[in-house]
Length: 110
Image 1 (cartoon, rainbow, N blue to C red):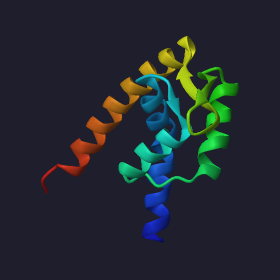
Image 2 (spheres, rainbow, N blue to C red):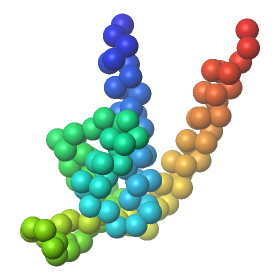
Image 3 (cartoon, rainbow, N blue to C red):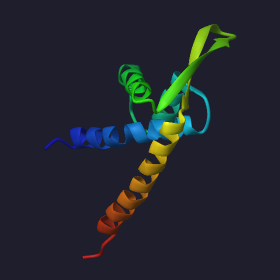
């Protein structure tokens, strides 16, 4: 088994959740999402992010609006829909339960 592949799979498993968390704080531009993910050491490239944002939009979890930019063409800013907010609340509950369960296993003394 390859450690690097396992690490990538673990990160992919929480990518949607992290993206929804970032967007939940307010309108955000895709490059800002990428920057925050990279700063958190969740390695993702544009080729992964944009299809995921499209999938989340098609699932009606987020929407976007175009805004003029002072440094180039208009930018697409993402925000959560009401459905996306409810979905994220469910994911938050799952994350708390899951992280508590994993921590209980990881921190258990032999």
